[in-house]
Image 1 (tube, helix red, strand yellow):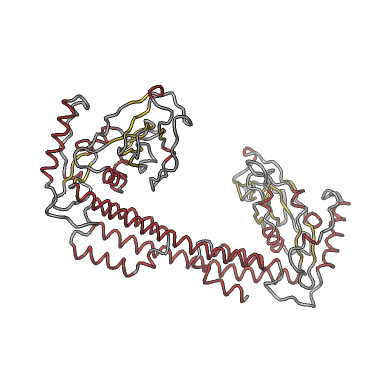
Image 2 (cartoon, helix red, strand yellow; image 1 turned 90 degrees about the vertical axis):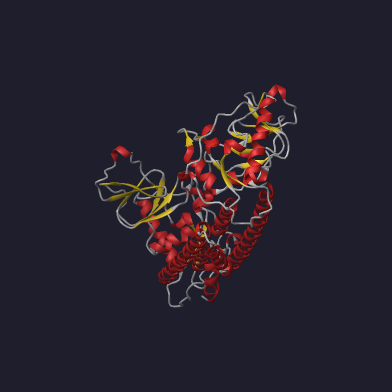
Length: 534
């Protein structure tokens, strides 16, 4: 018990700590370390003799089948020192896994009050029972080794076994023993199946019947405490998430500098607690990107290039490209209506449409025969969702294709237009080709590719893209909808300041995640070490 008390607090701090605490309780229970032994209890060897004789009588009466003799228990199978009064046994010498019986859906009767069990729990109702005694249902096909208690008359289907513990075995302790044997590890095949003959070879330790009952009572008490700890942990976690969400939402919605600074100071004061859970770090990353495109991440510089000049330069560049025949005259885009604007931007910024300031929709096709063998061939699967990290680079030699691809150049922004991959956006570091479900684009005059990528990965842009997709099977963002998307235009110098700040803060978030994962790993290793030593 001292061992358990030592790890109750750690369980609250470790993501799977309470689960491991439950495992520790069960391990202590089946090894005789949860409750003290009583020398006045009838020893387990006497109990086993009664069980063996009872099983022999059932075989003679034809109620259960005779099994092949199982080998004696070897010394290496005895994993711990038995407490006084306990005895080793093979599962097949004590338990009888009986096959369930097929009950097709058309034969079931949902108006009945008999539970019908599949491989992992109740699947329907019936009016007849297969077992009128409490039994343990053991998954045979699919959820191999899954355990369920059927405490009243029930029907077990042919994808499961059912087991009625013998006299001298407390029903609930039999369930505990089976859990401790990890029957699921015996599952084999794509849809794991459990062969009862494999389970019969397993070795367990049997305590006296009176001690079984004491163990069950103590486990119930401790599991109730675990339930309370889990509730406390979940409530605490939810509270931290709610507080963090409220603080971040305030950062994103306040318009005056005093309120913004106040919200920032609150997060700073409670930083360690707010970011003690990974969900909040993930939300912080997204919030950083949103703050960036709202102009709240870096200060504005009145000496930066005026927006009017920048937009004139963009129009001049487009005219030159049209004259050279590199692009067609684009379709005019409608003026921006006030109700379209997703959020306010600082003085000196300006909302424009994506199609006004980028080449979105202007594509250069590539055929396989036109490409060198070492050409980079990019697909959606090569980019990690949410982070947009490039997972792999595959060349034409290893990724052959027959249909046209979209050609891209170094420093082009490549955008996945297919839902649910609307946040897969990278900046190409070399020339290549990509699937037509990805759109290469670049900004005109003084739009840096890193800032363009940042905007297209920001929460407001992803929200717009998600709401604007069309198609049932493979929803995608159409070209016209994409060209209509709003883009927060800002000077090139401020773009670079924003990108640098986002990079620095994202690195900080990554460091926080690594530290949190490291702490979690150490605490988990501590639990595992305890389980090994028990």
